[in-house]
Length: 315
Ligand SMILES: Cc1cc2nc3c(=O)[nH]c(=O)nc-3n(C[C@H](O)[C@H](O)[C@H](O)COP(=O)(O)OP(=O)(O)OC[C@H]3O[C@@H](n4cnc5c(N)ncnc54)[C@H](O)[C@@H]3O)c2cc1C
Image (cartoon, rainbow, N blue to C red):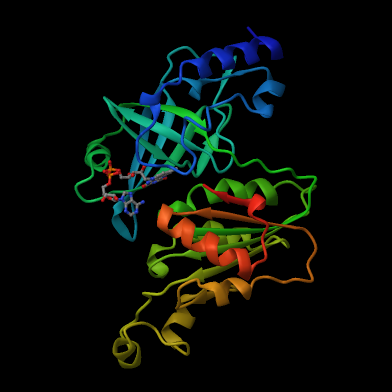
């Protein structure tokens, strides 16, 4: 059965009515589910399908891997556990949106870095927090386990017909939701926006999706700069300084073709160095990270990049 647009809209509205105070995870998310109720997207309405995520749905863990450079970071791949291969359902997680994981009464948000609309699968990157209740559960989950998710939650939408200068600032594992945002722009030939992806990580080993960032770098409209304040090699000069020095040959050798990295924090001066005032386009800032990081970047970016607060999005 194929849903028509009106029927799908009514179904979505019914699902929204079911959202209650208890659906909030209580962590003070910038985009709380209570203010950003999951809604059928334009893509869903056009496809005339139902988004299985609009209510809590069981997903099967089909793959669990530990990140190669940090054993406290997991890559989890989920697929819709529905037995019937429903032709009328899809999984819609718009770029920059997150999903809510429910285990008993425990709720925590996670941001997929990849999803497949028709196969109804998605992947998340999880940094296990010491003593965290959901971290304990996720450390123990095994392939074939069933977990419940709902969503999508968020408020960012990209209008590809509007040319923009998009500054995307990402901290640690929070780079995950920025990956679909970048792909969305680069894969649309009609989108003339340019992206500056400013990636903050402890060191080179903690730059997640490094290969993908290098692939993005083949596009004319993508620039990336890594900020690695704790990068440190074994050379006596860098050991003495407590981090790699500007002229460190070891760091230079570790970088790949056209990869740009700085052993520094991203501050107002660094942000301003990416401003490129002669490039036209509406200036937009997207910040992904914990709330302290988001606030700090938002404050300095207002002057460093001259961004209208209306065009700032905190994921
Ligand atoms: C919109 C949104 C999207 C998120 N997406 C992801 C994601 O894709 N991957 C992911 O790993 N996490 C993500 N998080 C964080 C995640 O929801 C949980 O908070 C985290 O997994 C820890 O849960 P927990 O129950 O184990 O510990 P909690 O009880 O939540 O936290 C345990 C301790 O760790 C601290 N802590 C929690 N999260 C962080 C953090 N990110 N950085 C530093 N300290 C922290 C807490 O302040 C607390 O002291 C997201 C959070 C938000 C608001």
